[in-house]
Figure (cartoon, rainbow, N blue to C red):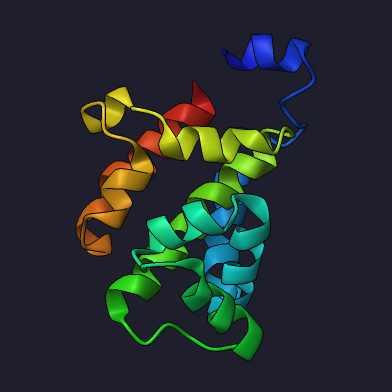
Length: 142
């Protein structure tokens, strides 16, 4: 659905894609990992959060949240921050809570028809960052 069609259905918020992008970047840098984990668990659910971070199940992510802990693994921490940034930006633009999860699980033409969640979970976050951020930005501006 285009932004115009989504706006007609009340699904796009008043914040612009550029403002959301800037705000999500800042939030991802300044919000502690345990808070990011908790927000993702609530926003996209435990299954998508665990998959995106690349852990076997959500208990690990819940432990980070509950114990206010940082992921020990560099790749897991990188995926957590990237997943948070992407999900946060989308949630700022689209008021319907299902849009971030839909974006994450859907085949994306910007990513050679791979789902962002699959790319993130199966890649080094440093390698996945550029294509994922470009696909997210194209989605927000689309």
